[in-house]
Image 1 (cartoon, rainbow, N blue to C red):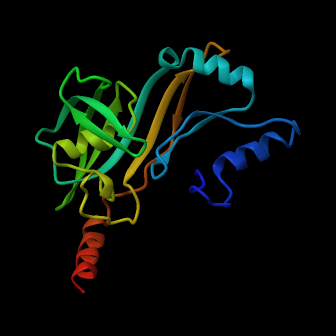
Image 2 (spheres, rainbow, N blue to C red):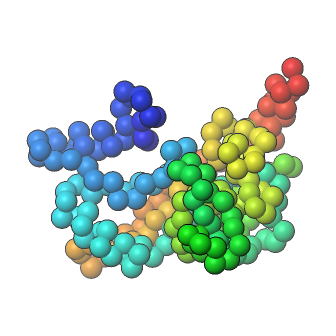
Length: 207
């Protein structure tokens, strides 16, 4: 949870810092793995500068697996596949898919597989091979399956009044111990009553 710009609301960063300061009055949280403001799921904070430096210095090597769950409009063309494209940050809040090799663009790779379906939506498990800004959201919109609730990237539905994207699993090497950490955040049953929510939203739009 990150406080909205200009808000005085208590953020997750504030909560983690308060927890650290119970033992070290001068301690502060250090954000290592963040999420888009509207995405839910796993975030990683370091409790001191030494840990943050150790994690960030070898982040790509330490992070061995990243899984997200997304509820999308429509259905991808195959049960599973690889999304391979080039992305360019056109502004701080928007990313575009551009031709391969475009100046300033970065290649983005995302593997997906279908794990559930309803009449209007599909539930996907997504594995990131790269970590670009808005990667999942842009790539899914480009194949005609925007994340539900993502008006910025062409979604026309909002069944849960939120972006239906969730960071569900992170697997990484502990920076000091010889230990592989698997962090999980079970996803809520998005698809269970999505059809009912979709129908209610459509009725609300027409009224």
